[in-house]
Image (cartoon, rainbow, N blue to C red; front, side, top):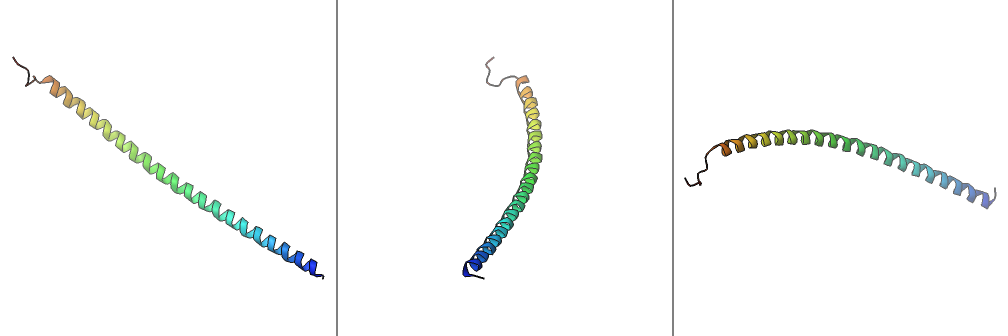
Length: 82
């Protein structure tokens, strides 16, 4: 073998090893992205449950305030002069 052939083989082996390393990094990154997406979906579903709970609580509060408003309006005004 000549020196040029040995350099070519070393360069090809180095390139192949670098390509394998890059593929491994890409697969690892894809795995991390999938995990991150799964975690994000879980957080979003929990936020939806909390938002529904808050919405229900606000609906109850609005109905309570409406009934309180009706009670206050039905009473005679204290500041009104007779």
